[in-house]
Image 1: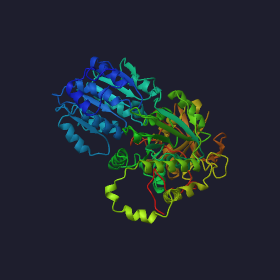
Image 2: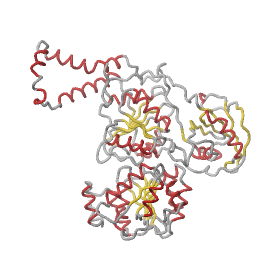
Image 3: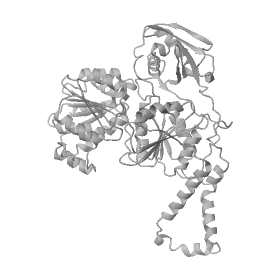
Image 4: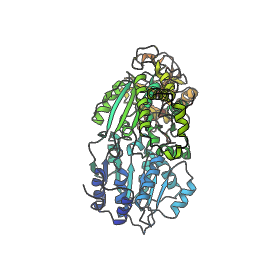
Length: 602
């Protein structure tokens, strides 16, 4: 393998890389850096998460950029604030010995006036989210007429979040002569659409097979019910006392609920999602990087840009709506040569969703039983014994106390001393799991499926289905276009042949009917009929239900074709997928005084 010097990078950049501990380029860096340096052709680059894509596009730009010219020469777009901040920080680190190189990171949730002041001073590289970038262009604070490089990082995710309009506006502000660089960890059809619309005969490079999962990650799944999903999550944490991982949820509400439950049950956990302020998100991420938090509960979007190399586990509390996003999730572990485990908690109904993911990652999921109380206690106990055995004794600090201690314990045998020690440290944990239910018995009354839909959701019928080329992404786009309300929750979606169902937060029931009536939308030329259903979801949507309310509405949906079928943290998209939350009645909801948790005293 070549060195960074061999790739054509100047000495100051190499010195900065050495300071950062970079020794050898990764495969994607080895392919992309010489290509960008030597050619002005557009580029599509695909590599797994954690393989160094940021350095692959930023290092050649730093090599070629004119440091004496204070005009903006490179614009890098990323889907989230966290990822933009991470990219900006990386570029600042790479350009440590380039004193005239200036970088500005612009994103929503921060003071725009301060960002404008920085841009006015002159910056060669701007890293930004699409929304804030467009705002600055409209204010004429960001001028892209001299841009030579446009980087679309995680471009598929930007489309998923509803940023197509913003991408178009940024493209219009850049010269035709620019070089467009598209980097992505997944290769869905939307990426091909981006390349077709925004690029000219792009060169394509890959690191490994497109979308294939990391060889360092093993994939397991646990069969659960809705009621046992959260207890199973706790057992995963208890089985692994040194767990350091991310639990992925599909919506902000689910994320906060799971995090709150973990915190209440004594775990070192916290939530990361779009409803938090930027300061709150930065604080949570910093605590997680410092390992003050062992379990981070996050949405897909919020976790983008979280650069942590030593995660032990990624846990899918719910599988993502888009199967490509599983690769993004699992790629958070198994980095930098470390081994990692990706776990999916799935019901029998969801089990079929694993097969398409297996085809993408080129690996099979291993069915693993939910750990029993006995297994967990054994793991925890021997972890405790290992900690005691490996503890270094500082005799200088305790020497004065030892004679008194020896005197008090002199009547105990070695075996009795060990038994008392283990009992003192471990009785609470043992008693908690003594009569724990078998969560693998899915037919048990205790483990029976809870309500499939929250009482706070209203279920709607819509007269469009697969034959109309409707899918969850297009349905959510159609709902979003009605501007029903800010941060509205969209629940379960069932797409059938000629009609479909979707759930909306009950608080927005009237607003949903009124919005469709007022906007009069159509879908691919068909008038839209939405009505409230009176049928329980238990029938799986297989029969057409009785309906009330609603009517026939016609008009035009502006973004019905946009891919937007996942929870977003973007102000652009109001709708979010909301999955079924676990019920509050749990058979396994008491905290145990164990490890991977804050210690509790009886």
